[in-house]
Image 1 (tube, one colour):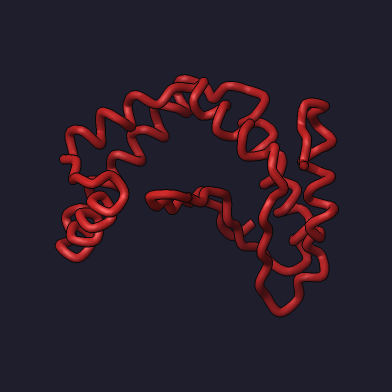
Image 2: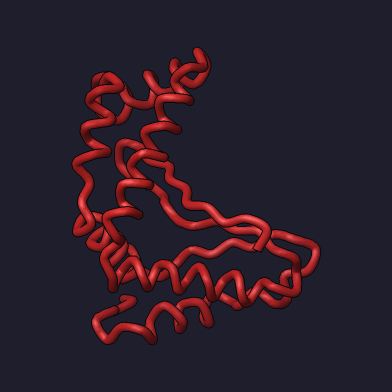
Length: 149
């Protein structure tokens, strides 16, 4: 893998979260398999205290650093007003981040992977990337509790 990272985008009535990654074309299958394994791990195992603390600190650092830019600050104000009908200050945002539990993370992932995945691949050669059916199978075979429809 050349890179892999989680992403989120949320709005008043919908949202999107996932893992994106990039790799040389010959490693498309391995990249997709690793991403599926990470979702499966999050659905079946609790993150460690160290992982949760690190994630909280990284998110707070990213949020606070981004808000130093006036452009990002105004975008954030607009997004919050459209989403929540009000603006929350940095202290409130950080408190909400600190309130996230291991159980919250596992529950969100479990709910998400009960639905068919959305997959997008871009590149000159994506022939090694598993198709949506194969990825759905990978997600479904590790748990008897999953239903797709």
